[in-house]
Length: 212
Image 1 (tube, one colour):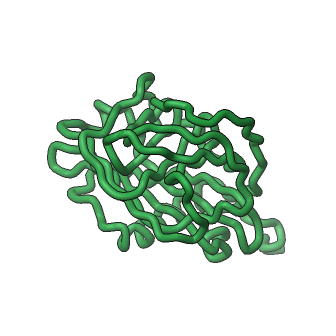
Image 2 (cartoon, rainbow, N blue to C red):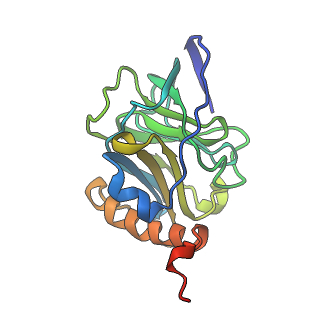
């Protein structure tokens, strides 16, 4: 992703315990959801929620703008003018969500907080000085674009971190064929349906539930 470094610093990549989405969601005290959908001739991202930074490791800060690079698992929503963000390591999840974007594709418009994920680096991106638990919301629009043109692959993508009361996750839902992008208040309902897909495709039934 395009990123102008402002403060150097080492980032330690922590290992977050992986749970199936359906089992994890009730335990989380916070969560952030982003949907990416085709809206007319544009591709629009809409996100909302809160984030718990307690079990993450603060890294560098830098100035960037809303952009996307599916190949590197990068999507950042919010302002299209340069704004400062903070990087946190300690997440675990997909390193990409498509084959497009060897070079970051800048959004044409956007609003709200600077929030995103950088999958290949396993970093979470939040507004400069963000305080855990504060409400966040943002949008980003790629004008006259399609999923094919951007090289994104539909599906749910979940990054997790933390444990116990500080367990948290960031979910990107890429919805093929959607006619409109839901408001952030509706994202949770979509996320729950995506969570079911994760359970069915990732989790194996525990042996203790096997009939004898």
